[in-house]
Structure formats: C-alpha cells, structure tokens
Length: 60
Image (cartoon, rainbow, N blue to C red):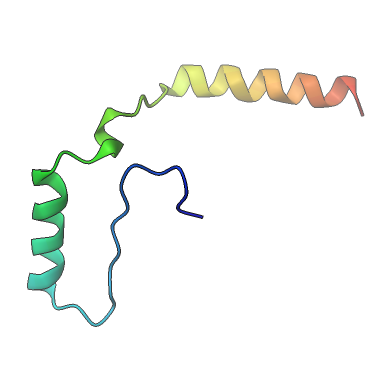
C-alpha cells in the first residue's frame, strides 16, 4: 500500500495531543512530498468527471 510513496506519516490512537502535534511539526519541518503535488481546481475536476462519464457511456 505504501510502495511508491515518498513519505508516510503514522498516527497511533494512543498518542497524546502533544505527541500528535510534535509529529505534525516534524512532518512539516521536513517538507512533506504532499505539498509538492498539484491539486486540480473545481472546474478541472468537473471537466474530468464529465469526460469520464462520457467515456463510460460509449462502452455501456
């Protein structure tokens, strides 16, 4: 599941709030790969969903 990911953060439900905040601070300090990813706008997402729906109707 985690293969190919550049970074993974694991939370333990037994962690205190302080420990969880410390993990987040460390995560941010090391510049997580997540911040490098492009996130499409709502309009781009809508276009992709419409195209995907059209594609599936052609082959239904």
